[in-house]
Length: 381
Image 1: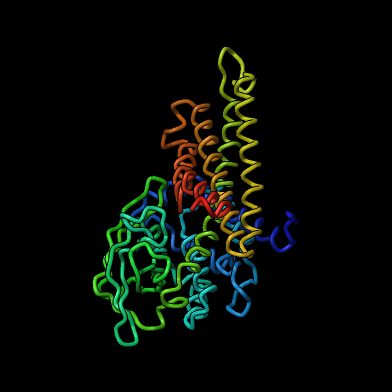
Image 2 (image 1 turned 120 degrees about the horizontal axis):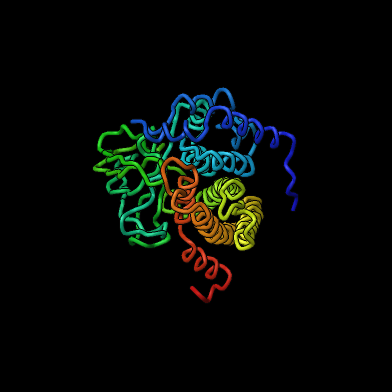
Protein backbone atom coordinates (compact mmCIF):
# COMPACT_ATOMS: atom_id res chain seq x y z
CA UNK A 1 0.00 0.00 0.00
CA UNK A 2 1.12 3.56 -0.75
CA UNK A 3 0.96 5.63 2.43
CA UNK A 4 2.40 8.78 0.86
CA UNK A 5 0.07 11.76 0.51
CA UNK A 6 -0.23 13.58 -2.78
CA UNK A 7 0.78 17.22 -3.06
CA UNK A 8 -2.89 18.27 -2.91
CA UNK A 9 -3.51 16.13 0.18
CA UNK A 10 -0.46 17.53 1.95
CA UNK A 11 -1.67 21.03 1.11
CA UNK A 12 -5.08 20.18 2.56
CA UNK A 13 -3.48 18.99 5.81
CA UNK A 14 -1.31 22.11 6.07
CA UNK A 15 -4.23 24.43 5.35
CA UNK A 16 -6.51 22.87 7.98
CA UNK A 17 -3.69 22.67 10.53
CA UNK A 18 -2.76 26.33 10.03
CA UNK A 19 -6.34 27.54 10.39
CA UNK A 20 -6.96 25.56 13.55
CA UNK A 21 -3.62 26.49 15.08
CA UNK A 22 -4.37 30.19 14.60
CA UNK A 23 -8.09 30.26 15.41
CA UNK A 24 -9.11 27.14 17.34
CA UNK A 25 -6.85 26.86 20.37
CA UNK A 26 -7.95 25.12 23.55
CA UNK A 27 -9.31 28.26 25.24
CA UNK A 28 -11.34 29.12 22.16
CA UNK A 29 -12.68 25.60 21.99
CA UNK A 30 -13.66 25.64 25.65
CA UNK A 31 -15.49 28.94 25.16
CA UNK A 32 -17.36 27.45 22.20
CA UNK A 33 -18.55 24.41 24.15
CA UNK A 34 -19.71 26.63 27.02
CA UNK A 35 -21.68 28.96 24.76
CA UNK A 36 -25.43 28.69 24.35
CA UNK A 37 -25.15 27.51 20.74
CA UNK A 38 -22.31 25.05 21.45
CA UNK A 39 -20.65 25.66 18.08
CA UNK A 40 -19.45 28.48 15.84
CA UNK A 41 -21.55 28.88 12.67
CA UNK A 42 -19.05 31.49 11.47
CA UNK A 43 -16.28 28.91 11.66
CA UNK A 44 -18.48 26.48 9.74
CA UNK A 45 -18.89 29.15 7.08
CA UNK A 46 -15.12 29.61 7.09
CA UNK A 47 -14.65 25.86 6.57
CA UNK A 48 -16.84 26.21 3.49
CA UNK A 49 -15.65 29.50 2.03
CA UNK A 50 -12.11 30.17 3.28
CA UNK A 51 -10.79 26.61 3.42
CA UNK A 52 -13.14 24.77 1.07
CA UNK A 53 -12.80 21.62 3.17
CA UNK A 54 -16.53 20.85 3.10
CA UNK A 55 -16.00 20.16 -0.62
CA UNK A 56 -12.95 17.94 -0.12
CA UNK A 57 -14.52 14.44 -0.48
CA UNK A 58 -17.10 15.26 -3.16
CA UNK A 59 -16.88 14.76 -6.93
CA UNK A 60 -16.14 17.73 -9.16
CA UNK A 61 -19.52 17.28 -10.86
CA UNK A 62 -21.14 18.24 -7.54
CA UNK A 63 -18.84 21.21 -7.07
CA UNK A 64 -16.38 19.28 -4.91
CA UNK A 65 -12.62 18.87 -5.03
CA UNK A 66 -12.69 15.29 -6.30
CA UNK A 67 -11.38 13.70 -3.11
CA UNK A 68 -12.69 10.87 -0.99
CA UNK A 69 -12.00 8.92 2.21
CA UNK A 70 -8.35 9.95 2.43
CA UNK A 71 -9.33 13.62 2.43
CA UNK A 72 -11.85 12.91 5.18
CA UNK A 73 -9.14 11.11 7.15
CA UNK A 74 -6.80 14.10 6.85
CA UNK A 75 -9.43 16.60 7.99
CA UNK A 76 -10.65 14.41 10.84
CA UNK A 77 -7.16 13.84 12.24
CA UNK A 78 -6.51 17.58 12.32
CA UNK A 79 -9.93 18.13 13.92
CA UNK A 80 -9.02 15.53 16.54
CA UNK A 81 -5.86 17.44 17.45
CA UNK A 82 -7.95 20.53 18.23
CA UNK A 83 -11.13 18.84 19.55
CA UNK A 84 -13.24 20.56 16.90
CA UNK A 85 -16.95 20.22 17.73
CA UNK A 86 -18.37 21.47 14.43
CA UNK A 87 -20.26 18.61 12.69
CA UNK A 88 -17.93 17.57 9.87
CA UNK A 89 -18.49 13.88 10.61
CA UNK A 90 -22.29 14.06 10.61
CA UNK A 91 -22.59 16.42 7.67
CA UNK A 92 -19.75 15.67 5.25
CA UNK A 93 -18.73 12.10 6.05
CA UNK A 94 -22.09 10.56 6.97
CA UNK A 95 -24.61 12.86 5.31
CA UNK A 96 -22.45 13.30 2.25
CA UNK A 97 -21.79 9.56 2.16
CA UNK A 98 -25.48 8.71 2.03
CA UNK A 99 -26.12 11.28 -0.66
CA UNK A 100 -23.16 10.18 -2.83
CA UNK A 101 -23.78 6.45 -2.61
CA UNK A 102 -27.58 6.51 -2.83
CA UNK A 103 -27.68 8.18 -6.25
CA UNK A 104 -30.89 9.90 -5.17
CA UNK A 105 -32.16 12.66 -7.49
CA UNK A 106 -31.95 15.14 -4.62
CA UNK A 107 -28.31 14.32 -3.88
CA UNK A 108 -26.68 16.91 -6.12
CA UNK A 109 -28.73 19.77 -4.74
CA UNK A 110 -28.14 18.90 -1.08
CA UNK A 111 -24.42 18.22 -1.61
CA UNK A 112 -24.16 21.67 -3.15
CA UNK A 113 -25.71 23.15 -0.02
CA UNK A 114 -23.32 21.14 2.18
CA UNK A 115 -20.34 22.44 0.23
CA UNK A 116 -21.65 25.99 0.59
CA UNK A 117 -22.04 25.59 4.35
CA UNK A 118 -25.82 25.99 4.15
CA UNK A 119 -26.97 22.45 4.97
CA UNK A 120 -25.97 20.72 8.20
CA UNK A 121 -26.88 17.03 8.56
CA UNK A 122 -27.18 14.70 11.54
CA UNK A 123 -27.54 10.91 11.53
CA UNK A 124 -30.67 9.74 13.34
CA UNK A 125 -30.16 5.97 13.52
CA UNK A 126 -29.78 4.92 17.18
CA UNK A 127 -32.79 3.79 19.17
CA UNK A 128 -33.17 3.13 22.92
CA UNK A 129 -33.41 -0.66 22.45
CA UNK A 130 -31.25 -1.08 19.34
CA UNK A 131 -27.76 -1.15 20.88
CA UNK A 132 -25.30 -1.41 17.92
CA UNK A 133 -27.57 -3.43 15.61
CA UNK A 134 -28.19 -1.13 12.64
CA UNK A 135 -31.18 -3.25 11.56
CA UNK A 136 -32.92 -3.11 14.97
CA UNK A 137 -35.52 -0.45 14.22
CA UNK A 138 -38.80 0.46 15.87
CA UNK A 139 -39.10 3.66 13.85
CA UNK A 140 -41.39 3.02 10.87
CA UNK A 141 -42.07 4.64 7.53
CA UNK A 142 -45.31 3.66 5.83
CA UNK A 143 -46.22 4.39 2.22
CA UNK A 144 -48.76 7.16 1.85
CA UNK A 145 -49.60 7.82 -1.78
CA UNK A 146 -46.34 8.85 -3.45
CA UNK A 147 -44.70 9.76 -0.14
CA UNK A 148 -44.12 8.29 3.31
CA UNK A 149 -45.26 8.81 6.91
CA UNK A 150 -42.54 8.41 9.55
CA UNK A 151 -43.20 7.58 13.22
CA UNK A 152 -40.70 6.75 15.95
CA UNK A 153 -37.98 7.91 18.31
CA UNK A 154 -34.25 8.33 17.74
CA UNK A 155 -31.74 8.64 20.59
CA UNK A 156 -28.42 10.50 20.90
CA UNK A 157 -28.53 12.20 17.51
CA UNK A 158 -25.09 13.86 17.62
CA UNK A 159 -25.15 17.35 16.15
CA UNK A 160 -28.94 17.31 16.15
CA UNK A 161 -29.33 20.82 17.64
CA UNK A 162 -27.41 22.35 14.72
CA UNK A 163 -28.88 20.26 11.90
CA UNK A 164 -31.06 21.50 9.07
CA UNK A 165 -31.64 17.93 7.85
CA UNK A 166 -31.75 14.49 9.45
CA UNK A 167 -30.67 11.21 7.86
CA UNK A 168 -33.26 8.80 9.28
CA UNK A 169 -33.25 5.00 9.19
CA UNK A 170 -36.70 3.44 9.39
CA UNK A 171 -38.38 0.10 8.92
CA UNK A 172 -40.59 -0.04 5.86
CA UNK A 173 -41.32 -3.78 6.01
CA UNK A 174 -40.42 -6.96 7.89
CA UNK A 175 -39.73 -7.61 11.56
CA UNK A 176 -37.90 -5.34 13.99
CA UNK A 177 -34.46 -6.90 13.44
CA UNK A 178 -34.74 -8.20 9.86
CA UNK A 179 -32.00 -7.18 7.45
CA UNK A 180 -34.62 -6.72 4.78
CA UNK A 181 -37.10 -3.89 5.12
CA UNK A 182 -34.71 -1.07 6.16
CA UNK A 183 -34.95 2.26 4.31
CA UNK A 184 -33.16 5.59 4.62
CA UNK A 185 -34.77 9.02 4.42
CA UNK A 186 -33.61 12.62 4.28
CA UNK A 187 -35.94 14.66 6.49
CA UNK A 188 -35.81 18.41 6.97
CA UNK A 189 -35.73 19.06 10.70
CA UNK A 190 -38.41 21.75 10.49
CA UNK A 191 -40.93 19.32 8.97
CA UNK A 192 -44.19 19.27 10.99
CA UNK A 193 -44.20 16.40 13.48
CA UNK A 194 -40.45 16.46 14.18
CA UNK A 195 -39.66 17.43 17.78
CA UNK A 196 -36.30 17.48 19.53
CA UNK A 197 -34.90 17.64 23.05
CA UNK A 198 -31.36 18.98 22.95
CA UNK A 199 -28.59 18.48 25.52
CA UNK A 200 -24.78 18.66 25.90
CA UNK A 201 -22.66 15.52 25.80
CA UNK A 202 -19.75 14.66 28.08
CA UNK A 203 -17.16 15.44 25.39
CA UNK A 204 -18.40 18.99 24.79
CA UNK A 205 -20.61 18.33 21.76
CA UNK A 206 -24.42 18.54 21.55
CA UNK A 207 -27.00 15.88 20.78
CA UNK A 208 -30.77 15.49 20.55
CA UNK A 209 -33.51 13.04 21.27
CA UNK A 210 -35.73 13.20 18.19
CA UNK A 211 -39.38 12.16 17.96
CA UNK A 212 -41.28 11.66 14.71
CA UNK A 213 -45.07 11.84 14.91
CA UNK A 214 -46.84 11.34 11.59
CA UNK A 215 -44.05 13.12 9.73
CA UNK A 216 -44.93 13.28 6.03
CA UNK A 217 -42.16 13.32 3.47
CA UNK A 218 -42.23 13.18 -0.31
CA UNK A 219 -40.84 10.43 -2.55
CA UNK A 220 -37.65 12.45 -3.06
CA UNK A 221 -36.80 11.92 0.63
CA UNK A 222 -36.00 8.23 0.06
CA UNK A 223 -32.25 7.66 -0.27
CA UNK A 224 -31.51 4.42 -2.07
CA UNK A 225 -33.96 1.58 -2.70
CA UNK A 226 -36.92 1.03 -0.40
CA UNK A 227 -36.56 -2.02 1.90
CA UNK A 228 -32.96 -2.59 0.73
CA UNK A 229 -31.20 0.22 2.56
CA UNK A 230 -29.15 -1.73 5.12
CA UNK A 231 -26.09 -2.30 2.87
CA UNK A 232 -26.00 1.46 2.25
CA UNK A 233 -26.20 2.12 5.99
CA UNK A 234 -23.40 -0.35 6.71
CA UNK A 235 -21.20 1.18 4.02
CA UNK A 236 -21.61 4.73 5.33
CA UNK A 237 -21.14 3.63 8.96
CA UNK A 238 -17.87 1.90 8.00
CA UNK A 239 -16.76 5.15 6.39
CA UNK A 240 -17.74 7.00 9.57
CA UNK A 241 -15.77 4.49 11.67
CA UNK A 242 -12.64 5.11 9.56
CA UNK A 243 -13.08 8.86 9.96
CA UNK A 244 -13.59 8.51 13.72
CA UNK A 245 -10.42 6.42 13.93
CA UNK A 246 -8.56 9.29 12.26
CA UNK A 247 -10.01 11.75 14.77
CA UNK A 248 -8.94 9.47 17.61
CA UNK A 249 -5.40 9.37 16.19
CA UNK A 250 -5.34 13.17 16.35
CA UNK A 251 -6.56 13.11 19.95
CA UNK A 252 -4.04 10.44 20.98
CA UNK A 253 -1.21 12.33 19.35
CA UNK A 254 -2.01 15.35 21.52
CA UNK A 255 -2.39 13.17 24.61
CA UNK A 256 1.06 11.70 24.02
CA UNK A 257 2.70 15.04 23.23
CA UNK A 258 1.06 16.71 26.22
CA UNK A 259 2.20 13.91 28.54
CA UNK A 260 5.78 14.13 27.28
CA UNK A 261 5.85 17.89 27.83
CA UNK A 262 4.40 17.56 31.32
CA UNK A 263 6.82 14.79 32.32
CA UNK A 264 9.79 16.93 31.28
CA UNK A 265 8.59 19.84 33.42
CA UNK A 266 7.13 18.11 36.49
CA UNK A 267 9.78 17.38 39.11
CA UNK A 268 9.89 14.93 41.99
CA UNK A 269 12.90 14.38 44.24
CA UNK A 270 14.53 17.29 42.41
CA UNK A 271 14.48 15.72 38.92
CA UNK A 272 11.94 15.67 36.04
CA UNK A 273 9.64 12.65 36.24
CA UNK A 274 10.53 11.99 32.58
CA UNK A 275 13.79 10.54 33.89
CA UNK A 276 11.98 7.78 35.79
CA UNK A 277 12.40 4.56 33.85
CA UNK A 278 8.94 3.21 34.62
CA UNK A 279 7.34 6.36 33.19
CA UNK A 280 9.64 6.25 30.16
CA UNK A 281 8.42 2.72 29.47
CA UNK A 282 4.80 3.84 29.84
CA UNK A 283 5.27 6.75 27.42
CA UNK A 284 6.97 4.48 24.89
CA UNK A 285 4.00 2.11 25.15
CA UNK A 286 1.71 5.10 24.53
CA UNK A 287 3.70 5.93 21.39
CA UNK A 288 3.57 2.34 20.14
CA UNK A 289 -0.20 2.22 20.61
CA UNK A 290 -0.49 5.50 18.72
CA UNK A 291 1.62 4.29 15.77
CA UNK A 292 -0.30 1.01 15.55
CA UNK A 293 -3.51 3.03 15.47
CA UNK A 294 -2.17 5.19 12.64
CA UNK A 295 -1.40 2.09 10.57
CA UNK A 296 -4.80 0.51 11.21
CA UNK A 297 -6.57 3.76 10.38
CA UNK A 298 -4.72 4.03 7.08
CA UNK A 299 -5.58 0.43 6.26
CA UNK A 300 -9.27 0.88 7.05
CA UNK A 301 -9.42 4.08 5.00
CA UNK A 302 -7.73 2.55 1.96
CA UNK A 303 -10.05 -0.48 2.06
CA UNK A 304 -13.30 1.51 2.06
CA UNK A 305 -13.64 1.00 -1.70
CA UNK A 306 -13.16 -2.78 -1.53
CA UNK A 307 -16.02 -5.34 -1.45
CA UNK A 308 -18.34 -5.12 1.53
CA UNK A 309 -16.85 -7.98 3.56
CA UNK A 310 -13.25 -6.75 3.24
CA UNK A 311 -14.31 -3.19 3.99
CA UNK A 312 -16.23 -4.27 7.07
CA UNK A 313 -13.38 -6.42 8.40
CA UNK A 314 -10.91 -3.57 8.02
CA UNK A 315 -13.25 -1.10 9.71
CA UNK A 316 -13.91 -3.41 12.65
CA UNK A 317 -10.22 -4.31 13.04
CA UNK A 318 -9.31 -0.63 13.12
CA UNK A 319 -12.08 0.15 15.61
CA UNK A 320 -10.81 -2.59 17.94
CA UNK A 321 -7.27 -1.22 17.80
CA UNK A 322 -8.46 2.36 18.28
CA UNK A 323 -10.69 1.37 21.18
CA UNK A 324 -7.92 -0.42 23.04
CA UNK A 325 -5.28 2.19 22.24
CA UNK A 326 -7.49 5.17 23.09
CA UNK A 327 -8.24 3.72 26.51
CA UNK A 328 -4.59 2.91 27.22
CA UNK A 329 -3.20 6.22 25.98
CA UNK A 330 -5.92 8.25 27.67
CA UNK A 331 -5.70 6.50 31.01
CA UNK A 332 -1.89 6.62 30.95
CA UNK A 333 -1.95 10.35 30.23
CA UNK A 334 -4.33 10.96 33.13
CA UNK A 335 -2.28 8.78 35.47
CA UNK A 336 1.02 10.50 34.67
CA UNK A 337 -0.58 13.93 35.08
CA UNK A 338 -2.08 12.89 38.40
CA UNK A 339 -5.32 14.45 39.68
CA UNK A 340 -4.87 17.60 37.63
CA UNK A 341 -5.27 15.52 34.47
CA UNK A 342 -9.03 15.56 34.94
CA UNK A 343 -9.38 19.26 35.75
CA UNK A 344 -11.39 21.41 33.36
CA UNK A 345 -8.51 23.86 32.94
CA UNK A 346 -6.16 21.25 31.47
CA UNK A 347 -6.69 20.02 27.90
CA UNK A 348 -5.69 16.43 28.73
CA UNK A 349 -8.98 15.62 30.42
CA UNK A 350 -10.95 16.94 27.43
CA UNK A 351 -9.00 14.76 25.00
CA UNK A 352 -9.61 11.79 27.29
CA UNK A 353 -13.37 12.45 27.31
CA UNK A 354 -13.46 12.68 23.53
CA UNK A 355 -11.52 9.44 23.00
CA UNK A 356 -13.80 7.72 25.51
CA UNK A 357 -16.83 8.71 23.41
CA UNK A 358 -15.11 7.64 20.17
CA UNK A 359 -14.29 4.27 21.74
CA UNK A 360 -18.01 3.48 22.03
CA UNK A 361 -19.33 5.25 18.91
CA UNK A 362 -20.82 2.77 16.39
CA UNK A 363 -19.79 -0.10 18.66
CA UNK A 364 -17.09 -0.73 21.23
CA UNK A 365 -14.24 -3.23 21.25
CA UNK A 366 -16.38 -6.26 22.15
CA UNK A 367 -18.93 -5.49 19.43
CA UNK A 368 -16.31 -5.16 16.70
CA UNK A 369 -14.39 -8.21 17.82
CA UNK A 370 -17.61 -10.18 17.47
CA UNK A 371 -18.34 -8.57 14.10
CA UNK A 372 -14.86 -9.37 12.83
CA UNK A 373 -15.22 -12.95 14.02
CA UNK A 374 -18.55 -13.33 12.23
CA UNK A 375 -17.09 -11.92 9.00
CA UNK A 376 -13.96 -14.07 9.20
CA UNK A 377 -15.62 -17.25 10.45
CA UNK A 378 -19.17 -17.36 9.00
CA UNK A 379 -19.98 -20.43 11.07
CA UNK A 380 -19.61 -18.25 14.19
CA UNK A 381 -22.82 -16.49 13.24
